[in-house]
Image (tube, rainbow, N blue to C red; front, top):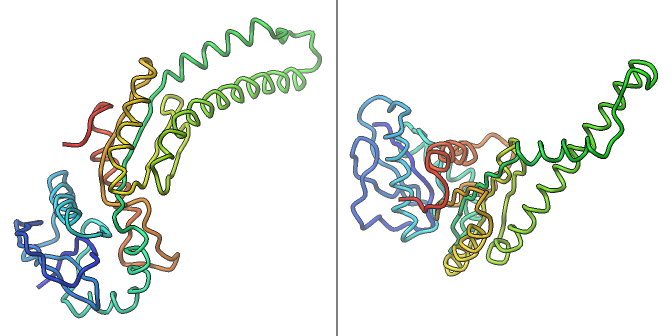
Length: 269
């Protein structure tokens, strides 16, 4: 019998609440020392990668979040028997334990901010051209003209990045007051101003949401996506050596499914 794994929790007790995962199988806990591996039996072949199967996996992890600290593992992680799972736990116990201790009573929120970057850059170009000398054929060799044009573009891009950083910093000040850790990606595209994840203490969730509401109403030309609370996918730290549970891949998959399919400003449902 193959065993499908959902996550690692900070308890070696059985899951009392009835939870059902892939193939509608009952979820149970495989204890190892003072932690456990939450799993279900997989009777059929490996499930297809569909939105329904991803959601089934995530539903289990979210259920575990209510009562435990959970380290979600890679979607479609399957083992041949409990012995192989216990062998992995023996080898990586200290990694899992360190993460469970650090992430206890913390959840993750995702925020994306979309701004009119194309219009902002267009305005910067027009403003810059109005005050800059036009590059003409009389400005020396083609090489010199090319270098002048490149330098003008560099100055516009620099102003664009500076404006973006100013907006991001103004927002991040509010979020960071209530976050234990954060990861920011700036200007992934011209219009995606910010893609961020924040690690927040459970008792500061309301404060963090209020900070978001304050930011959301400040600019009506920006759009926002707010999601969470989630398990701390983006804040699990594992060694560079080959690891059987690839949390980062899981985070990317759920980011695509959940964070980008809804328009901005609403919590997950």
